Length: 78
Image (cartoon, rainbow, N blue to C red):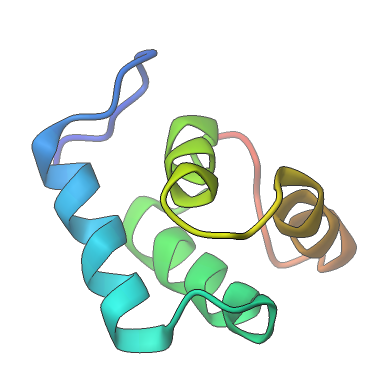
């Protein structure tokens, strides 16, 4: 599995984010399950993916970062 560590998101990562949004939704109550899905696949929460998630939903970066930093299960670095 290729992990995107660059500054641009690739098609594979873009498709994955769209897939989980389709499956779990894009409302604030979906943040926890979206983050879990991202971490399960990448073993941490890549910043570029979180930025993309915010860019295609109505979720604010503060909402995403608030949940990610509150729960100790989430890793923000590889």
